[in-house]
Image 1 (cartoon, rainbow, N blue to C red):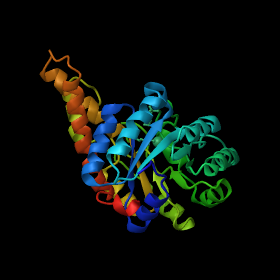
Image 2 (tube, rainbow, N blue to C red):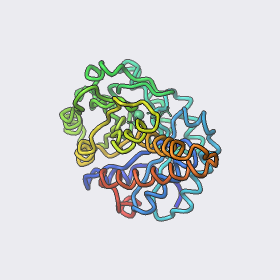
Image 3 (cartoon, rainbow, N blue to C red):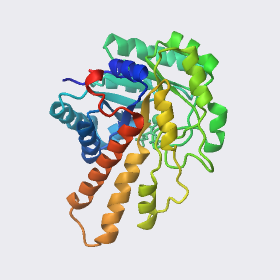
Image 4 (cartoon, rainbow, N blue to C red):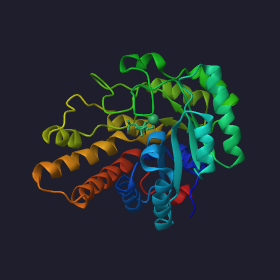
Length: 316
Ligand code: G3H
Ligand code: 13P
Ligand code: ZN
C-alpha cells in the first residue's frame, strides 16, 4: 500500500472512540522503533516530520526510510505528515515532496491572518489530494523550530470554541489542533497537570464529526525520567500529560495525538544507561540498538493508551 492521508483514519477514530498516534521521526532508529511497534500491534500510523527534522536528516533520507517502512508493512496504513509548517512555502514544498498530510501552524498570527494562510495552504494541498491540519489557539513551550507561548501564559491562549466554527468553515482545513492546556517539550506543568477538557468538548459540540488534534501529548514517563536523572542527566522537574488524560481525550473528538518528547526521552535514557554501565562502549549499534528497542516498547504501550492497537485494517 502507498502512503495514505488521514481521512479514513480519522473517520474510524472518531466513530470508534480512539486516536491515531502521530510520532515525530528524525532518524532511522526512531522510525524503526515506532514502525516495529505498529507492525506488532497492527495499528494505523502517522509519521510526522518537523521543519527541524527536514533540516537535520534531509528529506531524501527521511523519505527513503519511510518508503521502506511502507513497503515492509503493506497491511498498515501509514501517513507522512508535516508537523508545524509555518509558511505557505514549506507546506507547498512538502506537498510537492509527496507528503500525504501537512500542518499549517499559523496560530501565532491574528485570527484573520491564520484563516487566510490556512486557506492558501488548503487550496494548494487539496488540489494535490493532500489533507491539511491547522491550529487555533496557542500551545506552550519552545522547540527548536516551533515557537509557543511561555508556560505561564498557556491558560490565556486556549482555543476559543466560538471562533472554531468560523475558522474551520472559512479555512477549509480537514482537522484542527486545539490548545487545551498542553505544551511542547518535557516541562509541561509546574504542579498538578490539568487539561481543559471543557474546551475540547465545547469545540467538539460546535463541530460535530470534525477531527481534533492534541499536540504536546507526551507523558514524560517515570521510567525514562528516572533513568535520565540516575545516569547523569538533569531533568528533575520534567512533567507531562498523564496517560489517563490522553486516554480520555482519545475517546472524545481528538483523533490525532502528537508524541515526540517521550521518544526523545526513551532514546536518551537508554543511551545514558549504556554509557554509564559500560564506559568503554563505542559501537553505536550497542547504544542505538537498546534505544530503538526502548522506543518500540514505549510506542507499543502508547498504542494501547490511545486505543488504536489492532485498528489498522479498519483504517484502510
Ligand atoms: O512540536 C514540536 C516537535 O516536538 C518537533 O520538534 O522542531 O525540534 O523537531 P523540532
Ligand atoms: P511533545 O513535546 O509533548 O511530545 O509534543 C509533540 C508535538 O506536539 C509535535 O507536534
Ligand atoms: Zn506540536
